[in-house]
Length: 166
Image (cartoon, rainbow, N blue to C red; front, side):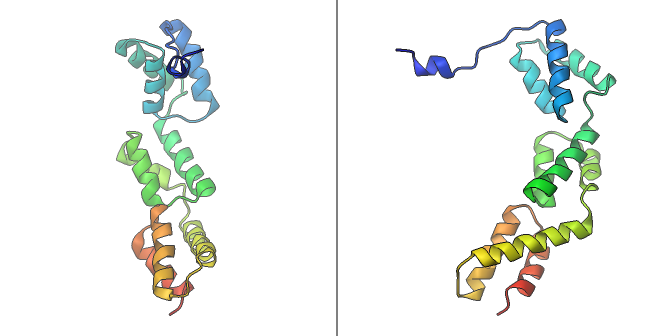
């Protein structure tokens, strides 16, 4: 019988920098990546830190890696596809180690009117889903949902009061 721990372990790949470069270029070309994601992937190839930094430098020079582009793609995608609010997007971009300037550029991808329309539609949909007769409890549940998706609480409460009357 095969040991389960043995089969679940990731096989350690040892690549030379010359072997790793085309692989990581393909990885970056597939979708926008942050420096942190690429660095972690390169360390999975058991490269030395100096080799990793050299490859990252090469990727930046050859435009495979661009954090501003990543921030724009990430912010726009998470908003359009997952309907995330600005706060959650900012937190995730911070976790990726992006600069404030890159994060600000990424957030510019979110149109303010679209943002408010999306928030309103999320709130309306959730208000229909929540089966609660007490309007106070219902408002609280709907607002908590939107806030957990990263929307600003003051804007959420303003809209919730309009959508769910007393």
